[in-house]
Image (cartoon, rainbow over all chains, first blue to last red; front, side, top):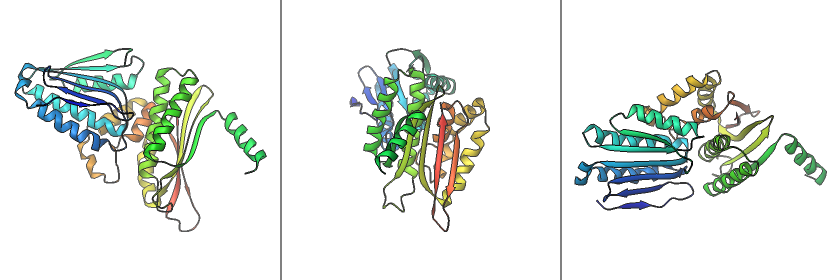
Length: 130
Length: 182
């Protein structure tokens, strides 16, 4: 498993997969015209990351999103769903969902993910630095 | 338009609190530029993050709807629409208008009409249901997640309003207008 780094653009988030620390980062904004085209390769990379032998030591996932459009919503949820599947197999997955304290939509979205994907250790983090 | 008409146009926009208005072709580049402008205008007004984010989100859903769904059969593939953001009576509004195919009108009504009588809790429940709806791929018209109008309805502080204006004769498209108050 190679490290992956997709730098942020105006319309797409930064993506990092670090096989040394076994961490996954998704940060920034997500409103590409074609959300599927952006997330399909991210999904594929996350899948091979989660299949690497080092996954046994656990995964830290950091979501630090400022804004995403409706077309990105299901695709971001699907990434968390992939983490859930691994967590359900007994792998320790810790997710940190950062959101602006004033952003009730982002906070509620995180709270819903925490409820739904309950095999993940899910931390909701209200932080000003988003 | 002569100058006195233009003056009237500008005054009228100012009296209705228009912060921003664009009409013309919508492309990815245009939306990128518009989004910067909307954010700058909101920031210049000292808009609290909480409201600014809702206005921006609604603006983006509407702009991308025009890009994806405006009927382009009469405009040689160019997606033409209008979009305005304004501030009036202490609230923000986002408006858009674009041509839609006649045979898509009923589908729009069926999506929008129920939202108008739903409470915020019902809208949130419908949003969650749609988020988990894997069968959405069967809706071949939708290019997103089927969450666009629900997202707007969630951000809005009043029921979202729409209007469909039919042309006389046998036109193949109608004008579709949408308004969200935040």
